[in-house]
Length: 77
Image (cartoon, rainbow, N blue to C red; front, top):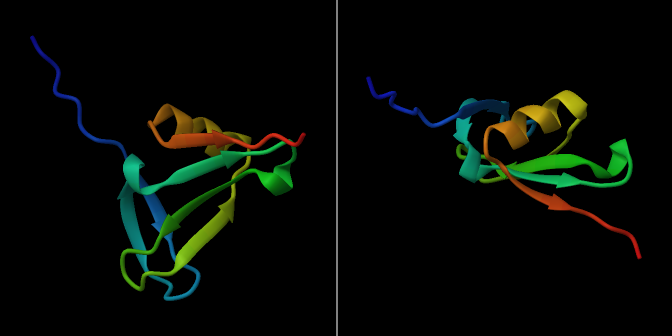
């Protein structure tokens, strides 16, 4: 028996146009900084084109990294 792997989709919302949609991992970026203030995920709203940046707590980081979202680690000198 072979298992078909379905792409992971993440629910998101745009604070500008208030649109709600699902995004594939490739549409999201995750930045992990030293503090909660510098850890966030971002995407471009598919409905209005706005650049969206939202804070990412520990659980969000786990979900996004587990779902294959590209991650950037921010380091300070």
